[in-house]
Image (cartoon, rainbow, N blue to C red; front, top):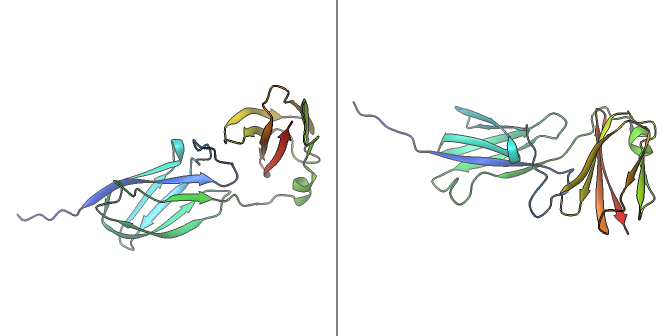
Length: 186
């Protein structure tokens, strides 16, 4: 019998979270996003895992429409061509997803305050009437998380006297909140 084999390539999409500042070594990769490729006949699906990589194996050459989605984030669509060069010199696209505010009480977002700013020894994070048990990450200007904890009080005090001077970011995440703010350590 005569058998015709279709050429295929393996490659990865890399998914990023726009709400987390990236450093020189990344740090804002997003795990758990779904990437779907379709040419109207064949559909391939992958989920981003460690390092934000959504790995595809043995995808037939051709042009595909892609959709990248994840709960709590906007959906990104586009077109991508799989060729002999895909995965060798080009790889898959790098996609950045933007968090979407869903059912966030605007008074909660507006009531979050970080003070004093600039600060030398400590900062206070006032969650106002926001939910309790929110995750708070302290991120340096290179995108590395330097401290992470769960706030159980409406006002949380963080000691920063051991940090180097510079710009830092506070990422506050909870069931109904996802906010990143900046402060300066003097």
